[in-house]
Image 1 (cartoon, rainbow, N blue to C red):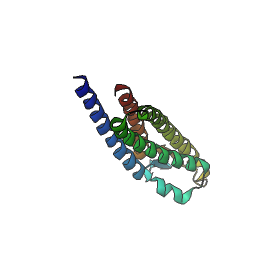
Image 2 (cartoon, rainbow, N blue to C red):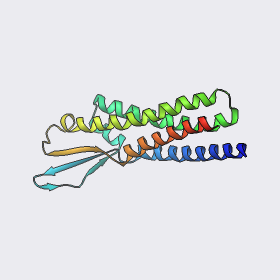
Image 3 (cartoon, helix red, strand yellow):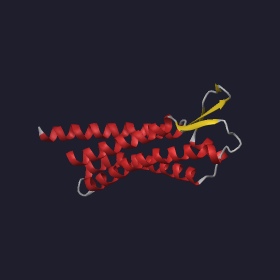
Length: 164
């Protein structure tokens, strides 16, 4: 009974972490920030920018930090997915490595959304200095999807390392 329970926990954890990996990759590919312009009293429709689209008009250090943590986050989610499978197959110290990588994945997801928010705060001042009527820039669905996927992946990976 205990063996089948562990197998179910491992299979559920592996499935959840694989789904989170797909969502994190999708998050990096879709809109990362949303910019809203206000012209007088009329608000224009938001402009959505992907990570590669942002690179065309900025060379800010906050952009580089945001991009670095987006990439690190996806790599750590992939490592968590791989280690969840490998730790079950090979055991040993891989469970400890899975726990460490899961913790790093959780932290990276948090830092990813923080760096994106810092970039959004800086974008109106540095990137678009001539536009004083910029209402704001906000993390879009891609940033949130990647960050939340990393956080869930980290929690599930850590849970799997304790339960197995």
